[in-house]
Amino acid sequence: MRRAVAFRLNGEPVEAQVAPHETLVEVLQGAFGLYGARESCGQGLCGCCTVLVNGTAVSGCLYLAVLAENSDVQTVESGEQPDAVQEAFVERSAFQCGFCTPGFVLMTRQLLDEYPDPDDDTIRHYLSGNLCRCAAYPEIIEAVKLAAQKRRKK
Amino acid sequence: MFNRWSLMPAVAALIIFIQTTGTFAQPVNVEAAKKEGKIVVYGSVVPQAMEGLHQAFKKKYGMRAGSVTGAGSFIPPYTPPDENGQTDNATPFWMVGASGVELEVDTETGKVRLMRLVNVADVGTPINPRVVETQLSGAAIMQLGFSLFEKMLFDAEGQLRNASLAEYKIPGFLDVPEIIVNEAVVAEQRNGPFGGKGVGETATFGVSPAIANAIHDAVGVRLTELPMNPEAVFMAMQKK
Image (cartoon, rainbow over all chains, first blue to last red; front, side, top):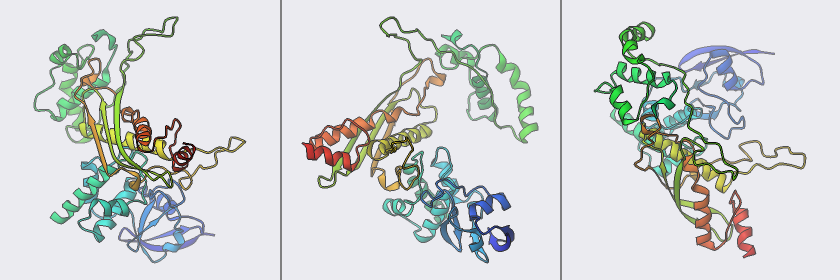
């Protein structure tokens, strides 16, 4: 029982045939070949599958794709590539394996929209829903601060 | 020492890569490097290969740089253990690391909070210092998880009971000590490439004993099992 679901994906109007049980991550990967959001824990606990729906970060592994109808979906693949946040993560080596990085990048974009010049504590609390098994946390704090600087210059 | 390296095309490729991309202002002098005991390349693959390599890169990648892959083998010196199980030559290198922590113990709940974690390691010559630091800090924080809260629980049938991130907690942002310092000491591993050796787990060795010692110093209980979670610390304090 698939049905057509239309939404905006990274600024473009799109449509996909979606089964009721399919999650947003499954549809992004299966129908659109976007692998930036990836499922890790499948319980909304690790932040690897983070996707922005109407500007708010959601866990793509729990968010049913049919609920995205008529909404604006943004993945790490949206916008300028690489953007200030991605550049900062690369420059500060804020990862080892990189599996969690897209989630961190999206949350950092949202963090910097809200707090253009965040302090350490704000960064820790804002990103505490994202897990990094390689534990690149100290480098991620540096990267977020660098990204904030880069954004201010632009 | 040189003949221990039977064949090192990977290292040869690396040298070619550095020269080709012009990352270094001075071309790598293989003979000088050999004398220093840093890089060892068997045969004379480098000068001949250099000529066509710029073109090969350009053809494949459209520019003078790209990925080079190769395979090589390194057979380390080894002496089997004697009848007492002892040998002075078991591994090409040993990893040496040390850690120090500053922590607080909540005597009502047994919860341990780290304020400062300092890790130093002998990694030989850090070839990419930034990556070395990330490796040390990542290893130390991962070990912090094993030391303080990560525990796999099995039922009577041997089934893992907490196989999810909801029940098996790994370190998150809020578990990282406010101050964390990672440093590689000045060292050279003479039988390693460019004076380097493995980094990986070097920063994990000291973390658990440092935490255990600090807990002992703080509340006078000696924990000898991991994890040193609030329950373990609290029960040990009760028994005191």
